[in-house]
Image (cartoon, one colour):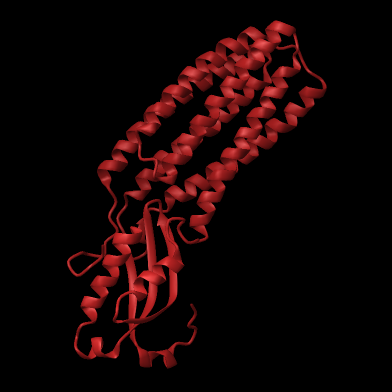
Length: 309
């Protein structure tokens, strides 16, 4: 809570970010090493599914790399130019990851449809072997990221990439088994199209979540009607208007409002106590630790130029 005894600096848990970065780097090493091996096998076997997986893993590697970079930026202190520091870098990184997923999915879809119509010969054994190793690698990377702070959209974005890849490799392994058992080469193209669907799903979630923050939508955990009701329960509060809530970055919701209080509170010098109670309410009921509340006497309404609910 930002109260009389707290400062107004926007703190970042350095220990948590260092730990998260360590997990991200470990996952990145696993992904890059396997991706290079997969590209080589895809080229030798002629498998689009493996190449699609490798392309997806390249995006994943970029996503994790961007996440590492974003944790560095987020640690920079606030300044006169950047009053919240660069904490929103993690949200921008998540949005960029979503866009790159869309581009990669479009490219793979075009090639997948072409190969579905004119399927080339594919080495099913190579698909099964590489996909099995891929399942193990992505499972390890997923477990590593599972220990990081997934309340962060930055970390959650990287985690969802790993989960998507894990399911994609399962699909690739199934395609390889089908080719070995039946000789149905189109199974490779079908698997690549399934991978596209998974990529689109992950992109939609990333873009939706990051877009909500960048467009300063109300945090999902904050119901403004409920906030207003709680604030109005304080006897000194007459009305609440210009109520806004948004998110700077993951786990950092912000709220502002104009609160009309009884004129006697101001005359008697009790406004500070009212402010304490309001901020305790916001922190205790809604986990909003940073709020900016403008206390107004009832006579101030005539001076509001753009007042709204």
